[in-house]
Image 1 (cartoon, protein in one colour):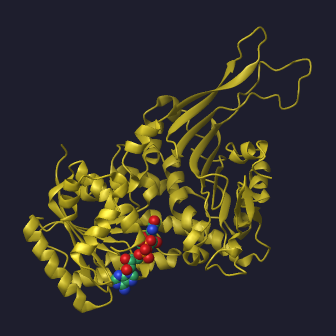
Image 2 (cartoon, protein in one colour; image 1 turned 90 degrees about the vertical axis):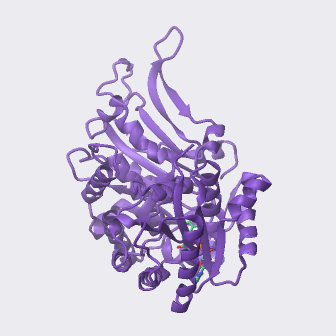
Image 3 (cartoon, helix red, strand yellow; image 1 turned 180 degrees about the vertical axis):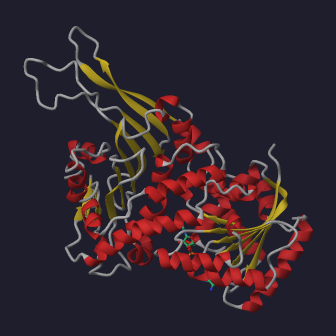
Length: 506
Ligand code: NAD
């Protein structure tokens, strides 16, 4: 049995989508595993007038897929309390404080408090100010605040938001969620790199030709059109998830696998990413917007037909680009990234492409075909939906001749293991309970990521060329392929080829 955690959670936005889809199921898993037992309580707050009983029913409903027993359900949900609360109304915090104090006594919570801000960021400043002014922050235990993305919409707004939060909480009390960092294989990047000498010794510009990071979604904006149209793929995905993955791939070896050392190295890696001028940004980054398309018999509408999207919108639903890292280790190695909505399939993976052998000694001397190069070794890290990694190596084909063919060493966690592995939010909540911020983003990382992205955004805002388009179901606009091909490389992962070969995609 694990050490039992002792804490009061206050969830601002307790009736929201995130709370229902992610937070309640994750808290339940922590309960089932014994991390949360008697000494925990949860206050859900939002504007609606709900009773505790009704709130508990909603929490219970959110757990259906986890098939809890009657007994588990009754015990777990009995720790949930609802407080109708408008975050802008100072009087409401008085009730919140009273309830928090009562629950602290009833469950002996030692003054340990976690405030989860599952609400739009424009409310964060007022919430944290009230937590301090109304003395909901305790003096006896720990006080931590968990914040959802997006953290600002550019460097200036992120800095303002950060100042508001820092006026009340110290950096080590702030847990900025990037749920990608809770994923098993993202955490495994460090294990693969630093636990295997064969990789870490080759992890540099002498042996690696390029690195490719793809985070593809196969859905459109669905009901989030209003939010997305203001944001776009660059701010929604590149500023946070993609740059975090790039930092983990590019960072130097930390002295120790500890929060402090990893953060220091990630920040150094982000600081070494080249800040583009306008010309470089336009050359190294391309955007795209999906138009209507078909995959098999399924038809998808275009972005401009989506609900709550401006009919003339220039918001990008796809980004592909190249980051360059100006340090000894990575000089000359492009880090290609791409992400988008309504792509061929939903998946996240990293391809590390090693340089070809200096000479192909198996080449056909008679014909001496130009570019007669052996296939390059590729290390692929699968993040989702499967988790694992593979390595392609060249071997001799069985038979009389001497034909070299790539073979793939493949290690994927079984579906059963993936299903049983803790969800990202579960891991992150447990980390926050333990006060471990390794898998959260430090302000310095957020700030540098915005600086990197802001220059690209500014270049695009100056550029009035039509936005390239891609049909729903494809892997992005032609420009995304040109971007990498003009460097003499190609995207390793091309799921759309299979769909085309099978006449499922035109
Ligand atoms: P939501 O709109 O479903 O929920 C917002 C919550 O805030 C609701 O409970 C609502 O009642 C409450 N609220 C709004 N105004 C209020 C006020 N004045 N006083 C008190 N409560 C008020 O949003 P969501 O999808 O749960 O997202 C919450 C946050 O998490 C957002 O910042 C979002 O960007 C972020 N996020 C959500 C997801 C997701 O999967 N839903 C994923 C990543 C990040």
